[in-house]
Amino acid sequence: MDALWLAAPLPAVQATRGAPDGAWALQPNPAALAWLKAGGVTVEALEALARELATTALANAARVAAPAAGSAPPAGPPLVRQLGLVTLQCTPVVLAPDRLLIWLRPDDNEPLRAQLGSESRAAQFLARALTLAGTSAWRIDLATQRIHFSTVGLQVSGLQPDPAGFPLDAIRSTIHPEDVDAVARGVQEALAGDRVVDVVARYRNPDGSWRTLLTRRVAERDERGRATGVAGVSIDLTALFAERERSQELADRARLVADALRVGFWTRDIETGEESWDDALYSIHGRPRELGPPRGGQWVTACVHPEDQARMAEQSRLEDERFDPASQSVFRIHDRGGQPRWVQSWACRVVRNGRRMVCGMTMDVTERRAAEAALAQRRQLEQANREKSEFMARMSHELRTPMNAVVGFTSLLESDADNPPTPRQRERLQRIGSAARQLMTLIDGLLDVAHRELEPAVAEPAAGLHVLCVEDNPVNLQLVRELIALRPQVRLRTAVDGLSGVKAALAERPDLLLLDLQLPDIDGMEVMRRVRAEKSMEGCRIVALSADAMPDHIEAAMAAGFDDYWTKPIQFDRFLAQIDRLAAER
Image (cartoon, rainbow, N blue to C red; front, side, top):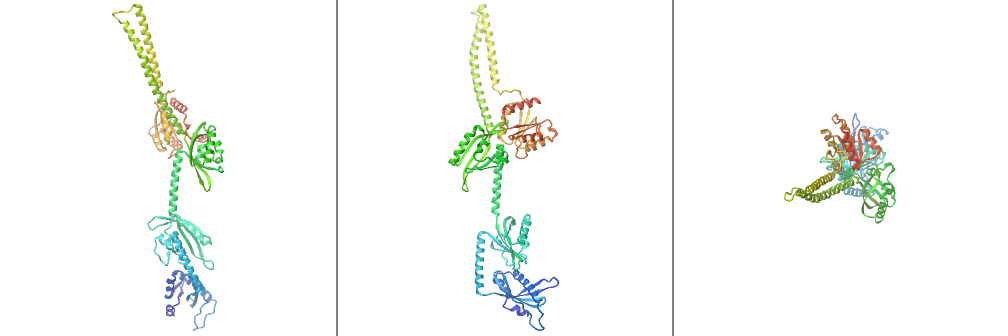
């Protein structure tokens, strides 16, 4: 019997059920193996079909009476099954209670061949389309626990073609450890229903690097609704994710620069007036975020200083009408903390999705303008001092020259031996000389006073005061230097971030520590806490120097332990008066 079915030209599979586990042992004949190779069907797929047929045939045979002794083994009714793109007529023959032979005959009618040829061409077209799109197609055989890849999948995975597929566990071992659970959940969700399930996960490349794939999967089921496999596609998102990370990195860097410069960004729809603000712009204008941005022309009345509202309303209207590609403006915003603040705004006008939009950024330039004004004032003072010095030099020359003649000739007349003066003349000459000397004394005194007026006036000299200023903004730091320079007896040290500020304070305790609250590494609050924690810093006065003039923020800083809170922009007279007061209290 074995020689007969093994040599038969018709494909056949012998199935034998072993004991005690009841598992089927399957043996295809050479004709079956040749047919598998010619049709591109895997051995595993045929074995899965044979197990199902064997179980069904034995169940049917159990309901039929056993054959008489010496009669032929019973053959069950032909069963029609689909294997890949081929329809098979399967005839099971029960040889024994635990052994049967399954004959396989492909349905060779012409309409079916035409259909299979059309389906084959469609499959080839789909394969080419997937290759061109760089998309990998794959299928998991649940019975064999093996996975089969399309050409692209093999190339991406660095695998060599294998008709038997690849062990599922080996492929899953290439999943990034952080993504293993997500992939497993995706498979279970697909098997639990009929919907498509997407998962984004990282897989290890042959060179050890990682690729990011979007995998889309759906369950395959037989005619009874039982899951037989999972089919899916994979799309490589590695380049997209890398570009997204680069874009995010650039955006983060831009945000850091914008935060350091205190720049706020905004957009406005020219037609509807609808605006959008970022957090920095709310902070610049001191506007509560819950109010949202002003709409339409309301931004002028809501944000612009009353003295600049008419100018800015007209400028904005004209620029919108002309649809100027780029524009900029400088104006004051509403008072905050009793002082007007200056901002500079840059805008560009673009069309997005058919909407005319204005996109812009706004920078608080109050400190910069104050520093520029202080520098201009200092230069004017220096120029005035130079002019006054030149004037006093001329005055000294013009006054002393004639007085020198008066004093000199009076002395000559008094001491003229050849023509001595009379007693009365001598008395008069003495009075002239005395008056001349008094006048010279007055001139010297006047010149001395004028010379001292060239130096900055000091109401109360801040003698011996040691100040440490921690400020990361170079413009603000230069302004403090310029002001402290007006108090020559004050010693100033500086630091540009929180950690170096703490180090400088602990290295040499200052009398006064001026702290900016927004520092690049640790904030001013943390600097204050670390300095306060050191016993060696007792007696050091710590003052916040910040542009944030919100009352609740000031209260919070004072409650946290600051001795005082000075707001920016710095008011020169008040700043110097406070320095003088602290020096007097030492």
